[in-house]
Amino acid sequence: MTQKDAASHDATDPSTANTADARTTNSADVGTANSANGGTTNSANAGTANAGTANSADAGTTNSANAGTATSANADTADSPDAGTTNSADAGTANSADADTATSPDSAAAANQDPDVASRHLAHKALEADDPTGWFEELYSAAADGRAVVPWDRGMAHPLLVDWISTAQPDGAGKRALIVGAGTGWDAELIADLGYDTIAFDISPTAVEAAQQAHPDSKAHYQVADLLDPPADWHRAFDLVIEIFTVQALPIAIQPAATHQVGEQVRAGGTMIVIAFAREDDVPDETLEGPPWPLTRASIDAFAKDDLRLIQLDRAPSPTDPNTYRWRAEYLRD
Image 1 (cartoon, rainbow, N blue to C red):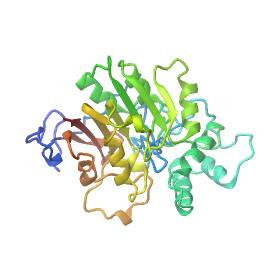
Image 2 (cartoon, rainbow, N blue to C red; image 1 turned 135 degrees about the horizontal axis):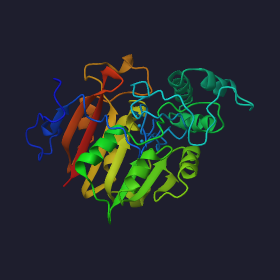
Image 3 (cartoon, rainbow, N blue to C red; image 1 turned 30 degrees about the vertical axis):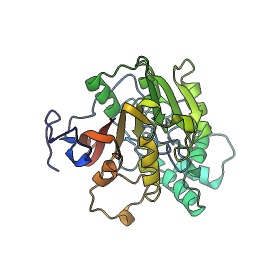
Image 4 (cartoon, rainbow, N blue to C red; image 1 turned 90 degrees about the vertical axis):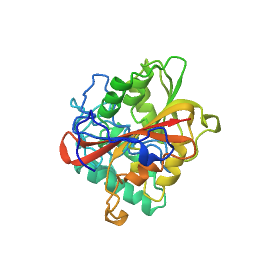
């Protein structure tokens, strides 16, 4: 894909159901807006086999393992396919390896290691136990008492979401929104402030609690839920669905089921936004050491099925690493 200015589009017919026809923008400028509204990478945990969590592993990175804290004054930090690496305390979590609490070997490792390495250690341990989403709660719980850092929690809304809002100018009055893998809630707060009746969910109870504590006067409704088994009354019930880094935070074998469930919550006439790290289609799955497991173009296309169409696709380099790219995809249900 050739690099282009954010203002130009490689587009054919955005009205077709074929995702390959969606407008595609390759831009170094897309999504670099820093916003005081903050909201941040929804974490790796969302939507996961016990899905709820993710704006994920860049969470630059899956809408939740982000309930923890590592926050950053710069919205563009923690922008790495390795699940972001914001190293600062936030949302009520003492970010210290020296916390005066009894720690298990795993939590001690999480406190002393690079946040990405520590989260991968927890994830791989959970995968070995056939519990691919169990590590999200363990990570958020450790972060809540200062024994770990959630690498994808930026302490503000994701810049690519902020940029989309500034361009699309959505009006949430009388409409409903769903935030997948909401983590500590920064993306949810941004959407709720637009007037949407907002439900923000995560698989991690500690993440949900952290979001409620961080935003005591929130207009959003935070709750624990599993992306792979969402409440029946959510089915095609939302005018806007936001998925950031949740699917990419899940093992590749689980991603198709998570992708399906994200799309199934969009009502007729509704919009879905997906933000994820990008990888080329020819990069073998077995070469990836996730989380995260970045999405291919084929994975982005897979969100579009039935009457849910991909109408805009941006592929932009990370502001902190020009060799790392991120997708921002917009879908519309007819």
